[in-house]
Amino acid sequence: MNESKLFFNNRDNIRLCGVLAKPEAVSDKCVILLHGLTGTGKNGEIYDDLAHRLSIAGLASFRFDFRGHGESGGGYNDITLSGEKRDLEAAVEFLKTMGYATFGINSASFAAGPTSLFLRENPGRIKVLVFWNPVLEYKWLFDATTPWSKANFGSEALAKLGRSGFAEIGKFRLKIGQGFINEMKWLKPLEFMGNMAAPVLFVHGDSDAIVPVQQSQDRLKSFKNARLEVVPGGDHGFHENRTAADRAIDLTQQFFSANL
Image (cartoon, rainbow, N blue to C red):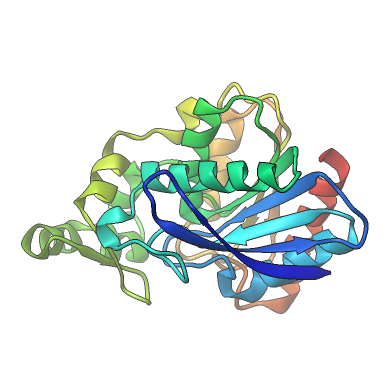
């Protein structure tokens, strides 16, 4: 596998950082790996492992940091769902200049929202879609139905946002501004993806304490051509259980190989 770190700009003139992993044989197929909120393109190194597996299977991959994350530019007020959609658009255009023509997306957690916006505005652009523990609906977060959603999107967290101008999300306390919260209140990702013809795979751990597996089980029926694989012992992002991580990677690589 040949890897190179690359920089490119989005249309907001924010400099983004990504890593392109190329297989031995030349291919015009590329899987774009999207991290969730508070993550990076490395996604806890599991995306490094996934990139390696895709490369062995003859597929290129591109894992990049959304604005305000990792090595990409932008501050917390730049982090919005629509802004991350523009980051994804920039990544696709950048990859097209490098000769890639056929794309798949692996979308983790909160990246599902920007992915839905991209697909609405670019129908047919993505041939295959894989979700890892996706957030495809937001009401349950504001309803504080889990300890994580209460801590990060409950009344106390939103009150702090009102006082300070930002909320702090997750164990890394990533700052997000009011714009992100406002978009969560109107964006309904499933409305943008229900008519997708592309094959879709959900991969979700049954030990996910951040986005319960029931979320994927409930959303699956909104898709025409989708299936769910539940990974025993899998946490959110598959970072803690090596067996679960290997299972998630196997399922994902096989799905892209079969459909891309």
